[in-house]
Image 1 (cartoon, helix red, strand yellow):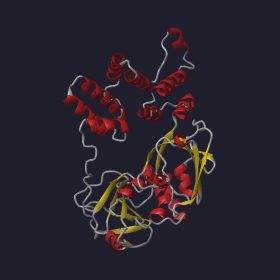
Image 2 (cartoon, helix red, strand yellow):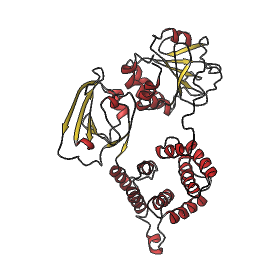
Image 3 (tube, helix red, strand yellow):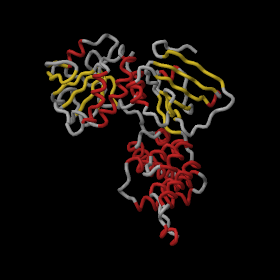
Image 4 (spheres, rainbow, N blue to C red):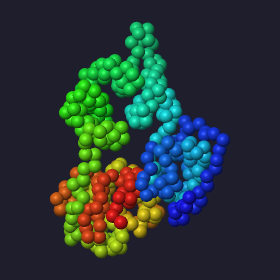
Length: 405
């Protein structure tokens, strides 16, 4: 296998007798097209064991990549019974990961606060045995001091574990009992669910409607489920079966940038400039990434989004012009310094970016900015060619793969 010499210092595969235990590792869920991970032929199901010698499960990998000049990854390839060791110059690989199923169960055994994310991950994998174990452990911990409840035969349980237990019954052969429990959960929590929980409920109501040949209800429920939780691979797969368009064209694609509006430079220069100045600086194969910060000068999601940019910029600079941030607000919040801490890191590392201050109205014809941050990429002609989220290096590599050649 040949590897991109600009990406990797060394790549070494070692055959082993058997795969190691995986409770303290991260499992690869997705590999971005065109990414270094794809070049390495990593696959969903492979395991990231460690980064710079530290267990991947406990390492803050985005921060490590932004700060470290050299990074060494160690993977386990279960299908090949092999280790893969990769040394890079701080290269983000373009993978989405989550704890292994055993690791998720261990977290529910020890967590002081209950959260849904791990159970959702197990649900996506169809790992109902681990879901049952995690629910049991969570409720056992909840009842540790509930002596009165134990005596009266009324143990406490987290409401979300009731939902997941009902789903396990549906998925493992007790559909009638499961749907009855699902109905009880829906009645008890009507209108109070978060969008992801509502999507899962609609998913199962849709499957039930499908089994009863109520195809109109099936399609409507699946449309609602996908609209609420499009990140779910399981819901997306069923939405395709229901005939729902899961890849509608983003209405920002093809819109024209207004290059003449004058902005005040807050970072990355001084004085004033137009977006036309940035377009004029693009090489024929380069694109301009724009980050809109409506209302805010900084916030948590913006700060998080700068980490993958810092790490990936040295490897993407032939395709991406330095990031330009457009903000309504000139002053940083003095009581929220953490909202701009990664800007400070970018400046310390000499990562190029520009922050411009001005009004967003009319920046892109026919588009009103609603979120902060909101990302688009424009070509040399000033037309939007990509729009979406850029919160992780996986999303950056996916975006780079989707840009026109």
